[in-house]
Image (cartoon, rainbow over all chains, first blue to last red; front, top):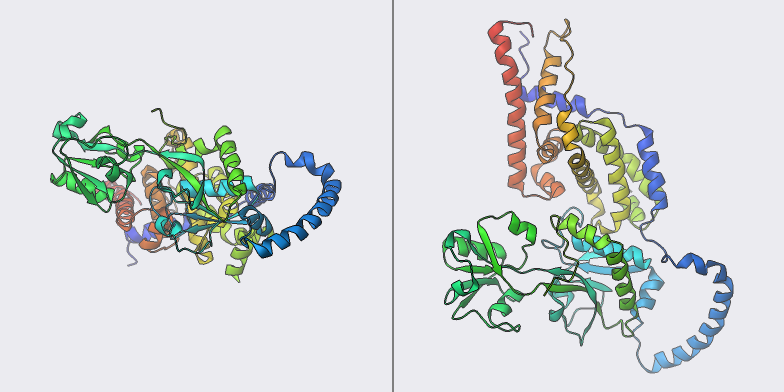
Length: 324
Length: 182
């Protein structure tokens, strides 16, 4: 008696048979045709072809000028600042070493391959700048650490621009605005910020929400409220669920996250914080940052940033300056 | 050797990328075909995954994870294509052939039941089942590929497998009750 195969054996057989498929050659042909016309990094901007016919005379002239300039520059360089300009360095190598922070919601999946909004933005910036983006997941604190070696060219720390020390870093124009929400439990019956007077409110430690609650960012603190800090939104929300706090100011939750939590009601919150690309002051003349600003302008104008934001933030466009 | 290919492709070497793509494309196509249940959509998904791979290779940190990364890209491409075609897909029904007389083992009927059950699953459940049952990836690897917690992967595999088992059991009941030929 052979017996009927078990359900699991039948399932295994089904997957084996259904998975045995011959892929038509046209798939690879079409993919290679597209990758052949889509370099990983686009060399030059849209204006570059117009310059092409002038390339030789320009190069000769530039060579003469550069030779003289180089001789003068070498003397100056030897006597003063030995730090190469950042734009010169990245152009020479063709690579921009770009740091992204490896946590939700800007970057996900660091174990397999980096993915997420900041990764998309970094790759697009690389293309627009004609550079290969060498993306390195780096903790935001480490990116901005005072004693860190300048091993990174551009940083995407995904933190408010007000937290970036202008004495040490150059900042681009903002490429997105991250919201922070003051939320309460829908079951609490609270529906106005005054309802939180005298109550404990949780925020992630050292985040914008904490300084806003403490009245350190311009707005007056909520009357008589007590600020409680936790390490994450999840811990704050757990405290809200336990009744340990009456409200939470979110740090990492986007609008799509809140839309998925109908048990929370948004009252208000700190203003959305602008977030920018950052370069070390090795970019002293600000030349690389000027290129980054132009590239962000292009990405905003042609809708690329909007598309990336909607794709990564659950359909929401966070790339436009919010109404005050 | 393969690591060298990935490194070269990351640095813009087309030939290295083509060698990698040829090596992985059959598996990608099988995964896409299983998830989408449509040959033409599967072709589109593989093409999108490969183009995406080329453009996003600089974001791949660990060359040894190239395969897992490609599975992620093709599953994402399936999800994108699936969203656009869900309404159409929902209207497609497999044409059930008359049971051949020689189908003594009942495999044709079983296969049809499994196919119908699998089509009822959501794309993310299908993807978890395909990575588990077809590619044989462990759940932690599947969690990495899909970008979801291990518990979610276990739950999707458990639910999906139960649905497929139930389809076979449902198919057994009337046959047994009527004493029909299987």
